[in-house]
Image (spheres, helix red, strand yellow):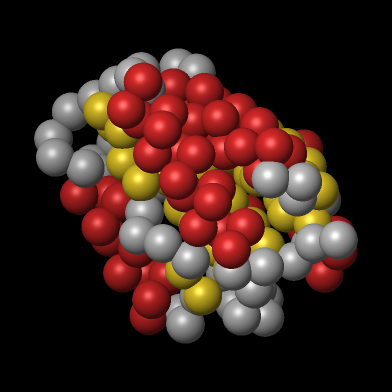
Length: 143
């Protein structure tokens, strides 16, 4: 059975809500999954997983959270061994440019994105939760 790590950072709970939706959908699809706040993920277990869902909201000037998420992502982005990955997060200002930048970074690093990045404005609404389910479906289909 394939195993997925859902790893996120959330300041207001919006990205956490998205992570929970992705996690629950993976479980519904009978995918073994673990859910981690970024500080709880042990990078030494990276090889134990067959796929990843990384979540981080837009922070500062349209960038990933700098204290915890960015250092973790930077340490793993070149060690994902072509395993399928999805990225997601929320934003509350500007136009979501951070997601486009993050997606481009992943492509430049030859990360195997299973789908385009998912950005939700503010607290995820019903349509955003459905999009989270679709993101989980895209990830599970690539395992």
